[in-house]
Image (cartoon, rainbow, N blue to C red; front, top):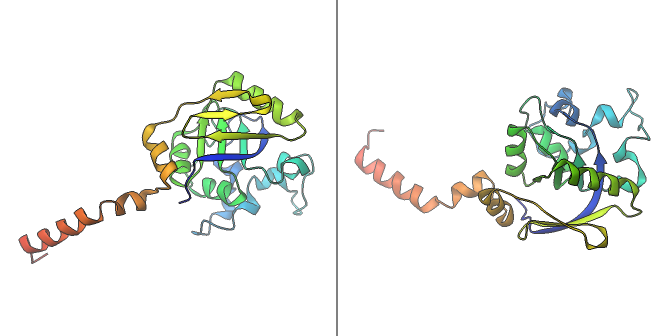
Length: 201
């Protein structure tokens, strides 16, 4: 998993509440177990017509936001089913951070395990970021995970909170497998001892 320390990117405003995982990546794209290739179908039913043509007024189809890597959105983002394909689709598109007032719990955990930083902010701060993203000629912000800071235009700074363990994992690029491998020596010692003690197993 890539390390997340400091990051600057284009912000795409998606002022919608209760965006569920089926909106993020519809069920017909869940056949794969690969983490790649899902970005083209991110928000598929909002991005494309039934004929596969782009819907021009959807935010990610607009020229200013086609390369967005930060999403600012409404409350309860990621609700619905627990499909891990949702963070896979976001990451494959290029989204590295999602900012919202609240997130669904399972989606929240899945994103951190896949290298996506989720930031919870008060509604007033989210509203301001959405307003700025819609109205700035260059809708970009910088995120410093170590300092818990978001820097906007005119050097406006917004502080955020994050769980220390999740922060540690993102800063060091550690997913669940990496965390397990940190215990490799202890696991191997246990296996040797266990085999000596119970060779019939």
